[in-house]
Image (tube, rainbow, N blue to C red; front, top):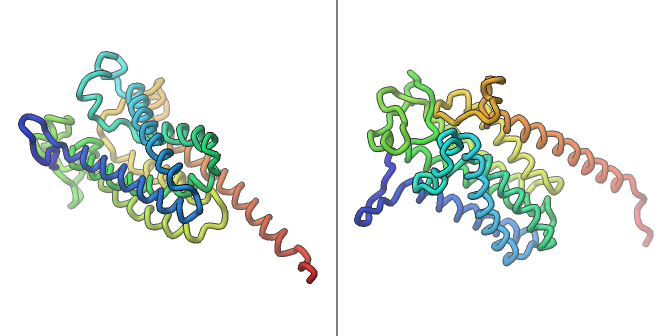
Length: 275
């Protein structure tokens, strides 16, 4: 709706970039706070967060290259200003951050599930701010709608992202942003009451995959077709990834929940210690 906040000379300060920076900053601060509450070393968590941030940026660009024909068919666009200032594909960023985090946690000797749980609420709040940035820029738009909350974007938004401006659209960016805001508070609560390590990050993965899968039905921005999967299945690339992520998270959640329950049962059936 407001792609540019202001200009410094001829250089635009984009609203999307400001929200993205806010997303990263809040995610890191929340992660460090929760990790410290869990007894994890702050210095290592700060380092881990910064490297995961870099991994997410690279991963989002890599998946963007594979999903968008403009970049896949014209590789020189990879060094264009448009490519560098675009946000990329969130699932690519998530995969990049997870891979980076996995190897660094082993190097820093950090417990994987406990550290991942500390990261989960920060990722959710990052989703919240990131999609507000998308809404401001006019990217990731939805299909035309007659619902009263349909939105029309500005001419400047059309010039930057190509968003249609002659018809009200589903505010898919706000659907995801507000949904993840609720998920953020749920994950904060769950972090205090979790029954086993891994419960928070797995619930994040499960909830995000469901939310993203459903929102994709009313998204309408062109995002390419990786290996012809979208054409053959009728589902978007993000929906296919959501199915894999969601099912994987659900299976791991059930396995770890059963192990935690079995462990508690064993403790409750153990004989009392002799004094």
